[in-house]
Length: 188
Image 1: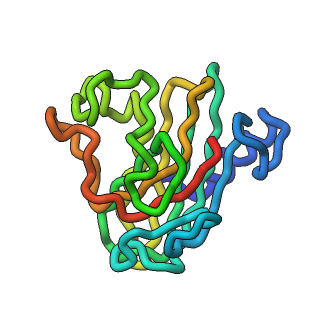
Image 2: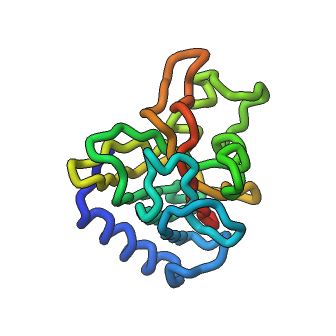
């Protein structure tokens, strides 16, 4: 889903009003923001590229999220410096980024699927997970947003992973989006 830049400004301004916090607020805050420049893995990297031919080193990502039990969770992902006119998948994942894309673990699910990997559309869907698929412009920029009706509790995700293609929805493939190309740590 594409949203106007003014919508991002409204989301951020609303988050400040509701939370009374700054973008650098601690994990567990209703307002979360993260930004980074994609680079090769290092233990202190915020944004990591695993496939620089599809997410080049130097590309950037910005994440804003507002979460609460009464308001649900709205997440915005904005990227720049990626390939032009490319369809990427993106999801919130359970763990922080690591040396490989697998370190981020599975998609964060509000109601966890008892079967792993989760490819059942009853669990792997944009109402139970946070999906942020986007298509880049001719300039390699993209923006996506997601709203789910639930907020985070004691279980919190740790990252957003960018995948090679838009997310599948059919049984047996639901939630899959190809290889993990890049990851950004987000202290949800």
